[in-house]
Length: 195
Image 1: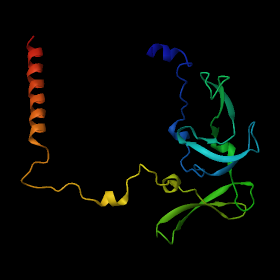
Image 2: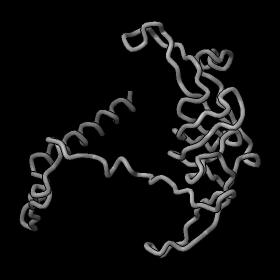
Image 3: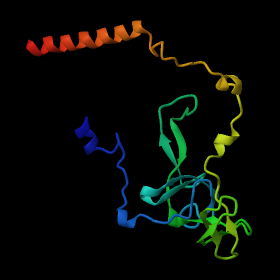
Image 4: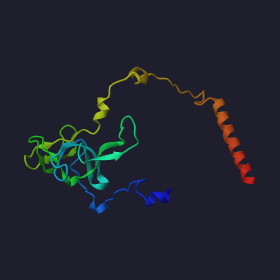
């Protein structure tokens, strides 16, 4: 099977590769940014970045560079085809200026954040000098709502284990069973080694 995978790309598509010297070192486009495609078949299409593929210098933009993918027929895909976005090279997209709504080149400036008192890199539009904010990374963590299977704060604070030096942490019966399994495992290994 391994030799068959090497011969044909139908079973496993070839992975694209970019030499480390050709990989982009400083990125200005991040996941969640609003961008516009500036070249190719979808020129002028605006969308948000769904995925950033740094190994191949590409990004996936929602609704851009759509292709058909053949999948097994099901209720979700009765024709056996689904559309999906394919990667676009990062040089073919530009960030959208929040003040004008047009694509713009950006420059990076390192500044102190007054709240955290840490040095941060910020992106600014070259045309209007306005800040292009970066989307928070962990938005989904804070958007979660409590459900009926979530642990209540009162039960988290409750102390259920009280350690004692007089009682072992693991009951003696369990320790004996574990010791017997280990002992029998050793003797069976010795017996197989002799024969």
